[in-house]
Image (cartoon, rainbow, N blue to C red; front, top):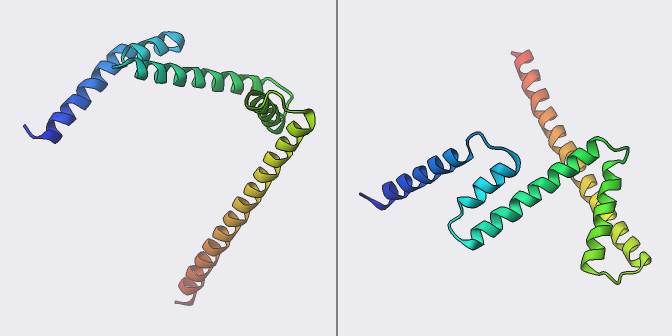
Length: 138
């Protein structure tokens, strides 16, 4: 049996096992089933951290859904929390500078992406206009 075929069978076998372990489970029960499928302690740790990240994202989505805060306000809160973790001694002024720098960078990125999208749309519009005119001219 060649190496690819062996790999393919091993891969399929692993995913069948994973499917059986996950079938009918959700939430924490699913997390535990995934963690149990890990082949090493390092894999268990990575899977556990990933599950926790997903749980945090779901919690944040839930909070955003039921809150009067804007996404920008949530982003600002996350920036402030991150700065406090990375640099616990940061002054309010330093935190404000980081928030402003991140917001400015994101604004520039959004503006850049909007301009690129506008350029792409214009080019597409020109192509469609040219095709329409050539069909009408026939």
